[in-house]
Image (cartoon, rainbow, N blue to C red; front, top):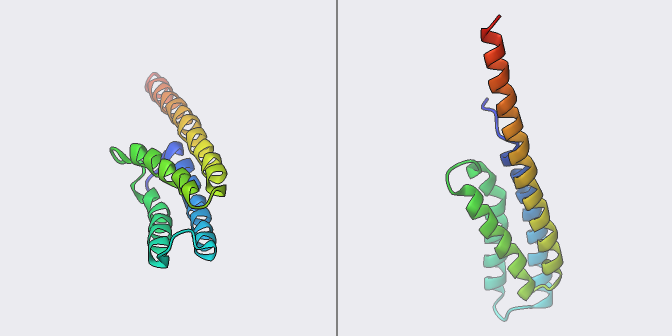
Length: 124
């Protein structure tokens, strides 16, 4: 089993929980008939929800964190149809930002500790 970075793990948690919220926002959008064609509501909502659910597999690969930021912007933009998504999207955007900053800091500290441990272990 490979060791995942803390940054990737925290980002994955945010995205999976966010996918559930987007699914429920899709139900709200459908119920409120925010767009004349229900197929568009379901297509956008379910497509984004499934994307958020699957995306953690790719976190850690080149360009994946940038794509994660873009997906956060897409979720916030759902507020155009379901205004509460501005608030919920902002909350998840904050959680994503915290995960990226805190996770990156933890990963750097862990790497520094591992380097220090490996140099000390060679001197014994």
